[in-house]
Length: 218
Length: 230
Image 1: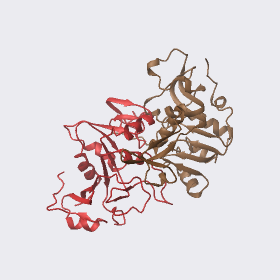
Image 2: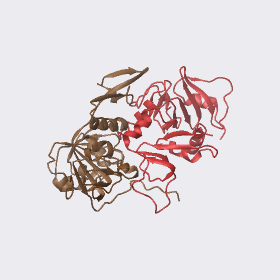
Image 3: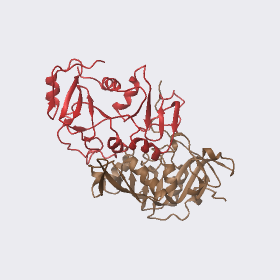
Image 4: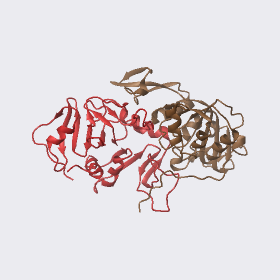
């Protein structure tokens, strides 16, 4: 059975390590914050100038001066700090963030990613996505394996405008965990109940499959 | 030293049609509401605006867009404003979309006297088209240039007559780098205190960067996406 968006977030949360500073993009990536394992501590970085994002406020307590990068109201945690946008991107560009999670329209087997523009239809802007993918060493894409028309999103060549090149290292989709290696896509895990055949069929580029591919443990 | 002006109308004196101005804020957080209203009232046109976002329909920068007072926007994300998208897709409004981090650093560099610098963001994408690039430490970077403007309009929480500014929480965002980069920086503040009342340890923007300051009134401080846990 393919995962829902919470399942994808839950699997990505398994990649978190104690003491990590993490940037979560809008959409499915924000849900990763709900699945941080009990025994580890992770600090979330918000590119609009907050380190240490807390939970959403209680009803009636929303503060208009305290928002995340998706413009939702948030709170702080013990040890949070505020700073301006240039310092925020110094943290990001300077390689101080340990893990970046973002969504995508397309990812190629060379690690290229398109995520910000559909020409003529959706041109909202790239926000911080290009800075994040260009600087981070550790980038995980959270995505559905195919788009709503059933077309593969893991492909050989992006058709849509690029966000970055040679930058994605790992993809967690509703069907699989796939690493982007120097030899291309490699299947690491299957979603519970999903077969290798289904994954191969829905991937638009060669997929290395070695031996028995385990199921995700969620 | 006294940089205090009476209100937003006085603060924008000298601004002309066709000029470039920077406007602080991230979404609706930390936007200079009074000065935006003064720009609408003054009816300035053909403005080039550098701001991370474009407000929402009918509020923030949306007010200026609705009146077609802006001919070009330089931003990183303009998603929450339908009128903006419409004007952009139809060609009425020229738009330069640039990566948010590059935007922040171009502003900081503009204020800091650094004419150009290299960053990796956008290399290999349409953002890199026509730009010089160079390899550093085995990685490709784009040459980006400083941004400056006739006017930088910023919003702060507290300020004094010398133009020292303190920002509140995430309402800092682009205000701090922009305050450095305007030829004339206008600061609107919620709390204006006599000189000497701000703790020097707490000042975010030293007054040297600010030319005009006034106490704003009637802040709406709208929330774009009120999100609660219960």
